Length: 120
Image 1 (cartoon, rainbow, N blue to C red):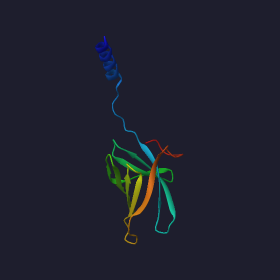
Image 2 (cartoon, helix red, strand yellow):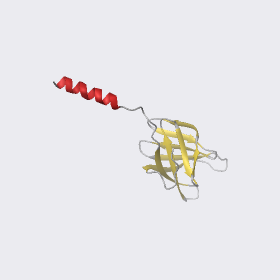
Image 3 (cartoon, rainbow, N blue to C red):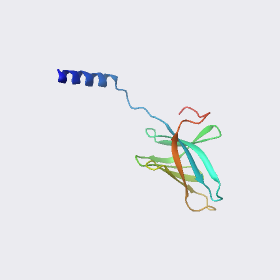
Image 4 (cartoon, one colour):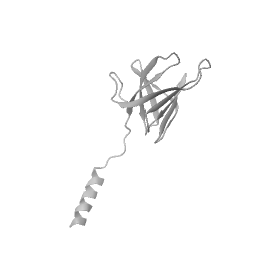
């Protein structure tokens, strides 16, 4: 009887199982720049599509050379590169311009999509 019940539950689960879908996840991030000003921004990433984008002025700006794994997200934009540590929320911003040097540190946390954010 127990075996038949378990088999029926397993069959019901398989019948209702759906394919894996991409789930975009939003982050709110902040870091301190070279002039000690705090900068805030929103970022969205999608593990299955392997994309990471910044939300700026009502639109998404997609990063290039994006790498997403269980531990981190790395992506590049024209003037900087971002590395986000998924384990502890640490953020590293590396300016690519020759006039700036070093790595700027900050943090990111999961959040709901910001107002006006496009559907991803």
